[in-house]
Length: 563
Ligand SMILES: Cc1cc2nc3c(=O)[nH]c(=O)nc-3n(C[C@H](O)[C@H](O)[C@H](O)COP(=O)(O)OP(=O)(O)OC[C@H]3O[C@@H](n4cnc5c(N)ncnc54)[C@H](O)[C@@H]3O)c2cc1C
Ligand code: SF4
Image (cartoon, rainbow, N blue to C red; front, top):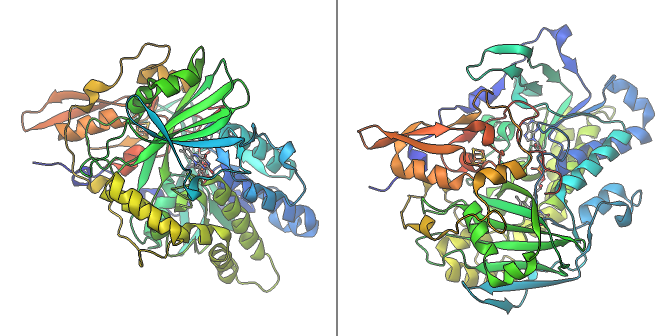
């Protein structure tokens, strides 16, 4: 009998992530504007608010001692940022409006040339670059480095950035979002307070901007609480490595085909990217839609397999892996955008609400643009005579008038088409591109990743054995993510721990960080699932496939610097 992950939902309820303030009023930390997440969206919001504060110093006084605060769960800004990344500079240019030039930004340079390859096991055939994948005038970056730079800019403009701080609960009072509660620190595995215990706090603000990125914990809860969902969101998992290499790579390379299988029954949609990072580094990554069905599919192992291709070996020859990481990407596109991007006291930005152009593999400039527009709407709440409700509603209007909206509308059914297999999907995608999204008319229906029934195909047998030079196992990869999380933290992964073997197998293979292990059989056809949560790199894949990633203790998880 086939198993679907959705039949074994996580022991978790959205209401756990929403509550009223509990700290006495005089013990709450009060800030002007509160931003959750120091990614491109959150930092763009902080920078724009800082610019407005600079232009209107008289208003700054009305916002108290901390006019703008940014909470970030990673050890430092950038620690949890991972992307390709080829960046469309449009968002940054509109944010800085000439105050910073491209040359001031931490880019590895403009894209010099590009190739798209269709791969078989031994061959790589160059195909014409689809219009959605043209990267002329874009720039290569490490998002982790770009995030650190944006954080410095935000701080220069007066924002207070609080790293190692997880926002755990959205505070709602009288139907209005009034801030967040941060997570406790210094608890043991069973939840007991250790010697260094520090309780979380209620942080309150006139407007809260959620910029949590993919699988945002509070964002998801807010979408449910305020009934903002439309079509279900779907995700892809990206696993990438950064290599020091002997020879420079000049082109930005994208591949499709092998090691993914084309048949409709597999539902394997995705591809790989290889980007030059200056003369002596490259980044190589594999991205696969999480609506796949094979219980033995492992994106980490597919990336290892990809590197054994003669074309990839040539790029990496004489080189050395210096970093590894993983993260999900929301892929539902236009049809999965929420009904509204605001609620009382709240604005939602970036990947959290799915602002990603899937065929172009781009979301950074949309995150930045949405952060900027959210900041301007938040600022409007300060205008004389403005009602907070109508001020925040202007965010929706400006998003709908922005280039984000137009771009996403043009590729609106692209991802959904690939659920029909690689070749049918490819043909439909071509027609959609040619008609700028007008064909086929209407919006395609999206199927939840966790609704896909699982199949078994012995796929794992063909993954290469790790040699520690070109190919690596998961545990050494977790080490290469800089993850130093202590083993005795409370478990932040919610999954059912007695499930059918196929599901446990799927989680075991899917997780790039080796968090899940199959334990004993229980005699009723189910097996025990054992967890090693300290390995987790917070990629978010488990939330798409039947479990729930909740925010762990602040400061834990990967410590990316180059991803
Ligand atoms: C493999 C891969 C390749 C990609 N390639 C490209 C590319 O080449 N070009 C491109 O434009 N886009 C690319 N993208 C997409 C792009 O990275 C995202 O669209 C972009 O990072 C979204 O920005 P964001 O600010 O919304 O979220 P994020 O970048 O995810 O940042 C969110 C931040 O919020 C923090 N956070 C989350 N929840 C909490 C919480 N509860 N409390 C405190 N902090 C929290 C996180 O730690 C993180 O620092 C790629 C993505 C992946 C995964
Ligand atoms: S346990 Fe962590 S690393 Fe593993 S799939 Fe879940 S979120 Fe990703």
